[in-house]
Image (cartoon, rainbow, N blue to C red):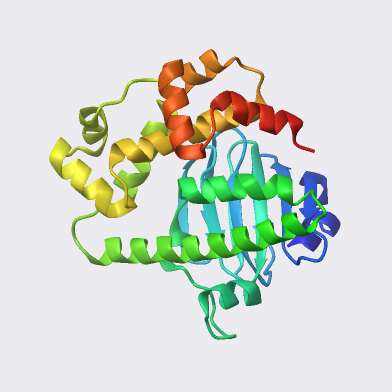
Length: 289
């Protein structure tokens, strides 16, 4: 994967590449202009995450064509040895991590010839707070050169692989058992959440987006995502707050408003999810090497 972005036609798109010393796991960040992106067959399991503004796309990751409107922190999963194609209708800032196939198979205790096919995960984009946080944490550690960073990267890569496998299991279960939200309804509700993080959203609001009663919606959403709607929304709000604290100089009051909270609410939820206050988190980011 790294060779494609540093030596091939895609090289002009490359914004930055990072590979921790002694580890075979590359990460790259690139700016993709509107148009076609044709990825070559690579031996890695690739996760591609949007780290910029929303964009519209149509793509095929080897499991059939699909299209959508990706939001920040949405990601797709590309299996090893698979041709993939994506047409971007808008400019996109993407971050890729390439996990060697043998590393991924070892994490899951799979045979050497296992194709690492995660079924439904290759048929749409996804949002998962755990994967978003892991990829966000990996990027700065990739620039460090010390034993602690290598240990952290190893553990995060293993966590990513296992989480992808768990999400695939959930998706297959939803596709074969009644009770969960249909994939297109799930994507619609999550996109609505992401576009209205600065607003007060009720269970009724979200149920209306899905066209279900609040009771049926809450039950189906939890069945699909493993979390009730309000907890999933909290994860999205805190992830948005983390991004603003990291990438902007907005005061905490403005960050709280953008995440749909008062300052006190943000402090309480942020500490519960992240473990420290918003102010301490920003200070940690500013003082990080």
